[in-house]
Each structure stands twice: as structure tokens, then as C-alpha cells.
Amino acid sequence: QVKLVESGGGLVQVGGSLRLSCAASGRTFSSLAMGWFRQAPGKEREFVAAINWSGSSSYYGDSVKGRFTISRDNAKNTVYLQMNSLKPEDTAVYYCAATYYRDYGGPWGQGTQVTVSS
Image 1: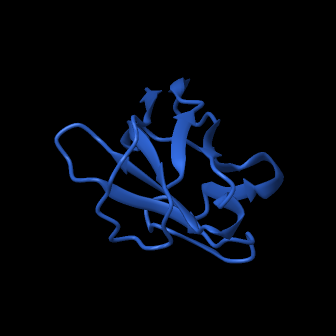
Image 2 (image 1 turned 180 degrees about the vertical axis):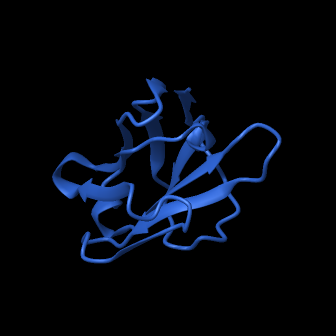
Image 3 (image 1 turned 30 degrees about the vertical axis):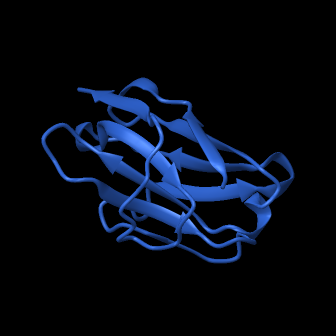
């Protein structure tokens, strides 16, 4: 089983950018599809983006399409989420998971907090 650790969150102003990282342990990372999800206070967890094992295919949730980009570096066992043009509604805890499916139900890691201030 792969272990995932998210990082890169923080406080950013509206319109700013952040890049999240998800580091994976284990030798199977390069064969895994990966996804990012988020959960805002009082809301259900939401699908953000997913990428296939090679990085050749990805898709996004409607609320982040055109602003966020998912990518991966299999040599570094890491998947990234570049977030641009951030909005207050992007404030959430962001989680990565070894899945390509938007209806993934867990388990989840500790996540990384992103706060967008206006």
C-alpha cells in the first residue's frame, strides 16, 4: 500500500497561486493514477483533479477547470497541484489519493490546508 503525504498549503491572497505536492512512498507510484480532493468547513469532500499513471490524461472538477493543473513526476514519486487565480471558495483542506475516480471514498491522509483571504 502506498503512503501519501500532502504539503504546500498556506495562506494566500485572492488571485494568488500555490503549488501543492503529494509525496508517495513505495515502488508502485509510477503505476498509479492519482487524484486531488478538497473539503471546506461544513461541506462535503469535493473532487478537484485526477491524472493517469503516465501523466498523459487528466481531468478536473468544474469549479477549478482552467485555473488548476495537476501533474506528476514519477521519478520523484510526487504528484502536484498548481493552483492559480485562487478564490476564497478554494479555501479547504486538500487531500491526494491513489485514484482516478471522482467518487473515491477514502481512506484519506492528513491533508494540507489552503486558505485564500480576501
